[in-house]
Length: 169
Image (cartoon, rainbow, N blue to C red; front, side):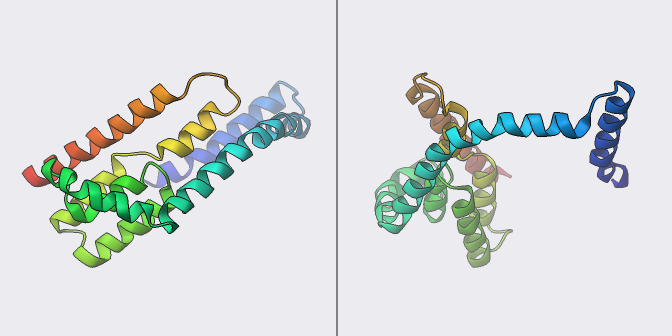
């Protein structure tokens, strides 16, 4: 495992040596790359800001708790413990919010409990769909509804499968 910690420094050293052999001006090339990245950052910022604000409003307004209460019976029917319903709903919106919920669930129920295992698997089997979509589709004129819906469905099916596997194992 110690050799793995050397991988990144060796990669940087390899790039540096390659640039020296090819007589590439590293600093100038790096600053040119940064100049090209700034317009991308500026075009992404409104989408990311909107996504972060909306996810915070979803939580603080109480809408998250209301939706969780409505969907808990359906989640329970599908094999998802009602205790992790809030995590299942939060994960597509916010990585840090879902990390806090996971930490709370593990503290309350324990990591070895069925709920703790399901929560961990649900956290690991899904992605922050809206954040990734905001980054990926920023600046494009493509329709984003279909990819987002497919991603949400795949995340939800992943959570269902994860809870089934936790029950079996």
